Image (cartoon, rainbow over all chains, first blue to last red):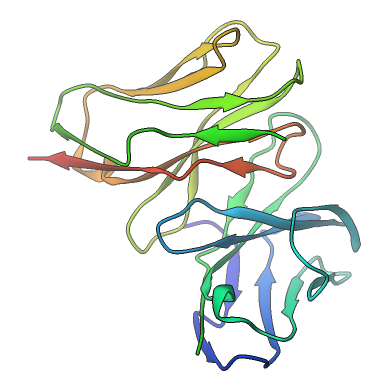
Amino acid sequence: ETGVTQSPTHLIKTRGQQVTLRCSSQSGHNTVSWYQQALGQGPQFIFQYYREEENGRGNFPPRFSGLQFPNYSSELNVNALELDDSALYLCASSSPQGPEETQYFGPGTRLLVL
Amino acid sequence: AQTVTQSQPEMSVQEAETVTLSCTYDTSENNYYLFWYKQPPSRQMILVIRQEAYKQQNATENRFSVNFQKAAKSFSLKISDSQLGDTAMYFCAFALYNNNDMRFGAGTRLTVKP
């Protein structure tokens, strides 16, 4: 297993609510990326944080927001939940020290929106 | 926009045999990164192999090797001496910058049969 952890493992919310997902990076990694993986599909890039600043964003609306803390742990916040937000949310940490650096994924948080 | 296509939703192979998973991508860029990730059932996604587009030599990692055809925009994964533990979803991915804004294909479910 990688050193990346995520909490909670599962979550059920209702439409319109807000949710916060958490990710703890592998030791020494200062970069974290978040992905949404709908059932039966590949992951879709939401955004990346590097040293507490957003460093790239995919095609997701502003109600998806994030934070990275000084210890490089991270949060993904989703406001005004919609049914289509039901998915597995993955975070991945890396250290951008060179092209050989590997990105390590966490086990994911499975979100169900009713 | 960069897109990744995996045309084989499911494949199976007998233990100890060889299997090739296909991936094509679309980009107008000259330099980029290509990846194969493995997602075992209920386990974390892990990097199998990575290829940098400017390197003409195909990447290899033990039993895993790629056939990178830049002009054809093709990036296939060959698994030799298949093992039961290779059973997983395999995702092909593309990124302009290592580990950032990664674009994934829809995946190929590989089953290794005893």
